[in-house]
Amino acid sequence: MRALLVVNPQATSTTAAGRDVLTKALASELKLDVLQTRYRGHAAEGTAAAVADGVELVVALGGDGTVNEVVNGLLAAQTGAGHGPPRPDAEATAMLAVVPGGSANVFARALGMPRDPVEATGQLLTALTARRQRRVGLGHADDRWFTFNAGIGWDADVVAAVERARADGHEASPSRYAMTAIAQYVSQLRRPPSMTVELPDAAPLHDVRLAFVSNTDPWTYLSGRAVRTNPRSSFGGGLGLFALTGLGPRVIASVLRQILSPDGDPHGRNIVRHDAVPRVRISSDRPLALQLDGDHLGERTEVEFLSVPGALRVVV
Image 1 (cartoon, rainbow, N blue to C red):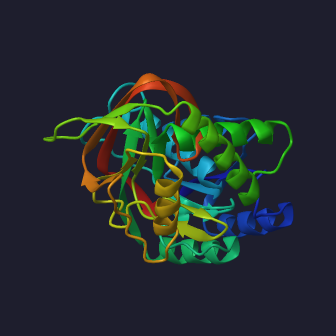
Image 2 (cartoon, rainbow, N blue to C red):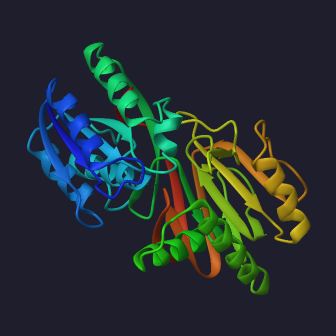
Image 3 (cartoon, rainbow, N blue to C red):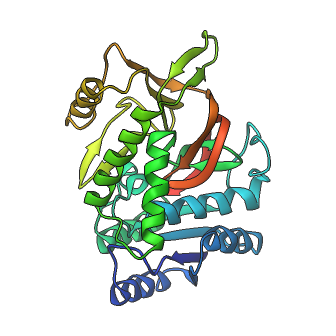
């Protein structure tokens, strides 16, 4: 089988020596080419070119950002998606495999992959031998695919601020995320956003202050602890919506307790939650930051999030 291994050399939980070992293990079973990413968008470009050239499997070795780029490259190459809404039958013919190498690895962990890259590589080789795979639904917004979460407003502002800090040479540590989230929260309180959320067959919800959209559970991880906004969301069950109509300190304190609880099932007067919807449209009275899978995409006043079932074949 022809395969491409996309390696992010900046991945936080791997070393150069470890990556060499994993590469040799995969090359022993696959006709393997290797792409080491050098810039933002490189993984998507390289994946699209490789698939157009007949590669049957793309292995992403890195964090969720690398996985997101590979997924977008797979689907752009094979379905024409990425330029307007995806076709209802959008589906990648080449397969994806993931070896976690980042700090959170939300997508890989939701698939049941081991957190250790060596163990994950072993599971991948076993799955290839057994021809074991599954179909995974994806989210789509702003001409981009996302695998596990998206957000507009507060969390996207946090992502943007952390990206700026990383560009200045600072580590994207859990403590940096926490401090950045607090700073952005204070900013939101001074000038709270006003969003309108629209769902199929429902009246529009106005004056929303925060909105998350998820494609699986959990939403993400904080220092290894699951953050659960929509615990009944899954890769095959549509999108989850989590929204807040208030941002007061008591509201946020209650929400944090619930979403960080091991059996978290957040609910309350200021919480709006739907765990399985085909489409979510969010608009705002001013441009707000947008993030998909932890990647800041700039500011938008309107975004439509779509669920696309079975868009991807994943070796697990």
